[in-house]
Amino acid sequence: MTATETHAAADEHASAMPAGSPTPRGLAGILSSSDHKTLGRMWILASLLLGAFVLVCGMLLHIERANLPGLEVFPGIESFRQFFTLYRVGLVFLFVMPLWIGLATHVVPLQIGARGVAFPRAAAAAFWGWLTGAGILIASWAIDGGLAAGGEQRAVELSLLSFALVVLSLLGAVAVLLTTMCTQRPAGMTLERMPLFSWSVFVAGAVWLLSLPVLVANLVIMWIDLRGPSAVRFGAGQNLYEQVSWVFDQPQVFVLAIPVIGVVGEILPVAFGRPQRRWGVMLSLVGLAGVFSFGADLQRFFSPSAQTTPLYVVSGIVVALVVVALLGGWADLGRSARRLPRPSGHLAVAMSALGVLVFAAIVGFIRVLGGAVGFLRSFARHNESWQGDLDRSLAPLDDLRGTMAGAGLLDLVAMAAVLGAVAGLFYWSPKIFGRRASHAAGFGVAAILGAAGLLTGLMGLVAGFLGQPERPSGNFASAGAEVAAILAVIGIIGVLLALAIVLIVTLRGAASLAGGASTVPDPWGGHTMEWFAASPPPLDNFGDEPVAPVRSAHPLWDAPAPSTDERGAS
Image (tube, rainbow, N blue to C red; front, side, top):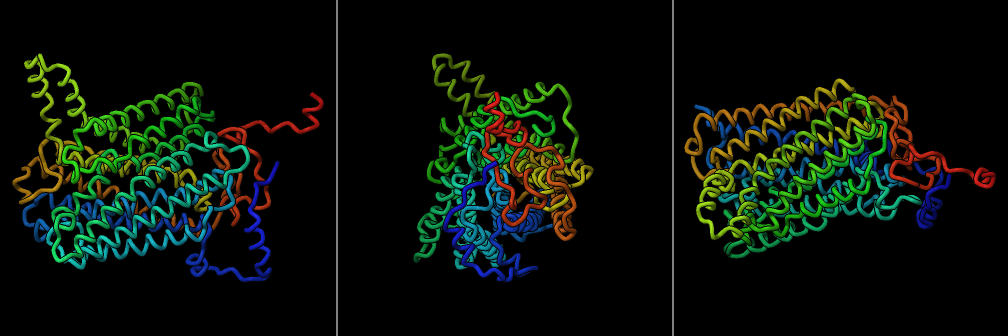
């Protein structure tokens, strides 16, 4: 076996350090750490705690939508819209995306055989910048800021700046991960041999690096216009959310679900005990999902017809087809194994995440179906009766624009992403927490959180077909009646279930860290490099053990390479 190459600068720095220099321990060690494993755990726990806060905001929104007699959560429609924007910003940028970054920061360097991340201090700065920005962002909304009309100008300016700080910090963490994957791989590990989770993080990170700077530009333009004597257009209160709404709509929202594919693709081969077949096809499908999840060029504020363009329609169709093709690839894996997978908690959560993702892809396909059939109209202009029948049958689909169907899609994708990340936490719990997660807990999380995702998503879809607006402009009593109230109550139940699971996972994770390590390096029979390390891994991940050259995408299942004597004898 050959050791991975280390940089001379790092060796010189290590030799220059005094041999007896003390290493901070306890809270001081955590706060000053640049170890990717410690940072990953901090990302995970902080995002789960903020996720609980975000889910409480979502529950309050559903309670207001229920329009229950004698129960008024918000004093006016402006306050509702402020909370609406806080919920969406928090769901994506304070919960789901940082949760993925935390899992990837901990696992990806181990998966690719690296002894750390490329820029450890930049990784630490990204976390603390994000956490600081998150605190300021929440405080700015609390003092009448946000992305809605009627807010106090200085507070709105602070909201824009803190939002930009959060996004830039997340981009810094993503840049560190992508640089690590490009520069720290061991000998033989080409991009085609990267584990599927690392590859999915690479694809999602590339899309984020290309699209989220556009969001920062949106925020800068709004801030500059708001700082003037009077907001001309971009800084006007009624236009603030419109300029960033593309981040929370398809196709961009599907980027959050790309790492779900990676987690499922890691767990299923281990459950079946066989390598994934048609590996190149699976990698290509993940890349295709990333390409058609780019949504920075589909901004309704600058192009009101963005949701009727061919690119928007094709992206929704392609994402749905990619999910179907991935299901076929995993079905082929099960058929080749000729046996049922080994039941486990992480497998149950992964299957629950996959089910919610399939539902999200169906909803995304339904939302673009009206536009897709619009292409057929242009080829049948001579048959007006056929077009009339088609228009009448597709009228409900065209009416989904601007309705709760969009909110349902966002909730579905977010729940699929949270389920996928929790499945990863269960699967990699020996590496992250030093202990194996309970299988019984995994089955419970899969059932409860999966039901929560389906309830919230189904509520949004049905409310969309009933014509409930995503952002109501007046009294909720006029936006729906008894059915709308029932749907809102269903949404409340779904959010409560999700909130309970998030709190339980957070507490269990913190308790596992406090309890110390008590597990073997590879309890599942894994096939990727992280299972070569101890559980939990040492500071440099692999200790004194050298990392062998990689010859496939499942190096731990490869037969040992023949020695020189064996090759000569043969």
